[in-house]
Length: 253
Image (cartoon, rainbow, N blue to C red):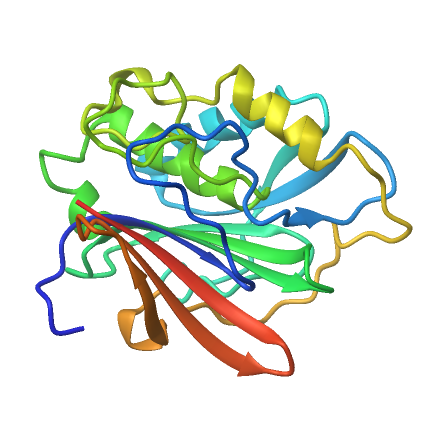
């Protein structure tokens, strides 16, 4: 990209994602209808722990928060990837941190899709280049970004994308002051119940096949297809062929 990177939060999906109108809270914040296929509720999704000591408490907090949902549980298990690469593992979510550099982003969430809507694997990257600075090296910022990026891997979008609106009391809300936006709220749990209301005949949860790739670097994001009027929302699409897409959604600070 030719522009100077600014700190952002990024979500990546393997199919087209609907964007919220800037400044509006979402009554329905499903991320394109994406969900893990499973044959029963609640189901348990493994979170691979590839994070260093300073992040362990935040991962535990997010796992406990999301497990309060009536339709899904999470369990923290040993990671199976190198944090810098953070290669996703089929059937689970890998959570990683490293000093990824002055990329302009705080966090990345990626999901791979099969059959149009079924998530097969996911990953989260947390950029210590920024979290090691006084501005972001706080419990509140770490909890918000960890909670939000893991929430994306379940199929959740943001409730609000305007940094200047009053906090909604959820980590799925963008804010310049994360003090009251560190955990899910009741609407997040209700949205998960809606997303996972139906059952599938097969499951994409729990397999252990490593490998895959993401598009965490700007050079891999593909074509810019949308920018909001205020320039703070951008969407990029990378066409992998055979009906497979990676869509990168960027919030610029």
